[in-house]
Amino acid sequence: MTNLANVKICVVVPTRNRPSTLSLLLKSLLHQSYDNFCVVISDNSDEEQAIENKAILDEYRSEIDILLIAPGVPMSMSEHWNFIIDRAVEDIPDADYYSFLTDRCIYHPEGLSVLSKAVGDAGYPDLIMYQVAHLRQVDGDLTFKALEYKASALTQIKCGKLLQSFASGQRNLPSPRFLNSMMKRNALIDLREKNNNTVFGGIAPDYYYAFLVLAHCDTYSSLALPITAAIAEDLSNGGNFTGFQPNAASRDFEQKTKNEQSDYLKIGPIPNEIYLLHNAILREYILRYQIEEANEDVCAKFPKIDPMKFYRNSLRQLMEGRRNGDPAIIASSLENLETYAAQYPELKTFMARTSTKIWQALLWVRIFRNRAKWYLRGGNSTDSRVEHYNEKVMKAIEMAS
Image 1 (cartoon, rainbow, N blue to C red):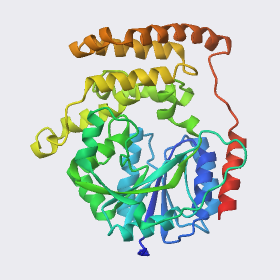
Image 2: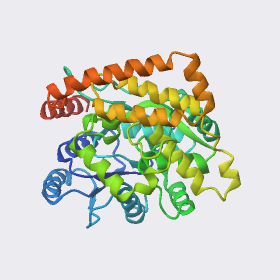
Image 3: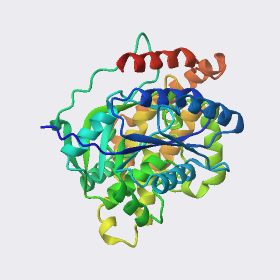
């Protein structure tokens, strides 16, 4: 039997220079079937986009409880995310749970209602994680399927076991990255206090948060339903890096990271490598271990990283990205991966006994072939149908409400 919990949810949204997707997020909140929520938006945008964002927010203020704040000075992603969490906890003290979204996410029209039911059925857990649908582009009409919620969709995830899976090289793990979860107020305050009053850091703040949670929690609840959708994934720095297709914003982020967070970049299986996804994730894994080094009980939860699994996952990403990725970037990442492999005798043996060298040779051939194609098409394969895409998302939200 479903427990209808009327919890107050504070939706926390940091935004920077994305007025079009911020508008879609607000539209999705306007069409929620659940009304016990408020929204805190922190705008870290440049002046022109900040003016546009305020005009968009003003359209929704009469129908949605919105608090707009701004840091006042430009901030890095981690700094901005910590800023808004601090303000949300301080300014919305009556919230039961805090749900964190970026400005390129939207809620399913039944999303907050289902989350409210789920936390009741789960016994009001400290943290509940949910699934996220990923929409890179929309061909034809986009529609939201009804969320057929049942309490059986809830499971308990053991944090120690998940850390073992990360170390063993498993991919696509259900990690609580705050972008796909919400946390109870008291648990969030407690977690901040354990980490010098911050919950974000590193270069990938969502995974920094995930490993902070996994280090200090034993279990969390997981809901096997897509509560939100990540839209306009061509605007995602992580997605662009994973596909070896950086746009102007991604390259700007990369340069700022190298200039301002060079110490963080040195951490990881492969220092200074920013495009290999598993390297970026395990950088935050290693960073969390280093931070907790004095806490033996926490460190015991972090197994050693399996170099073989890391190598094979990274090589797989290179092979998957070879078709549309920038050949020069793929070549550089492959060189970094080969340097990493040379450190481990077991990897040398593996490469000698298997077809790995053939894979690498094939990859090099494809890199040089694709490099010619890349330059012939002007070094840019990005499809710019943004307005058409946004119209499809907006129509789907309206139809589902």
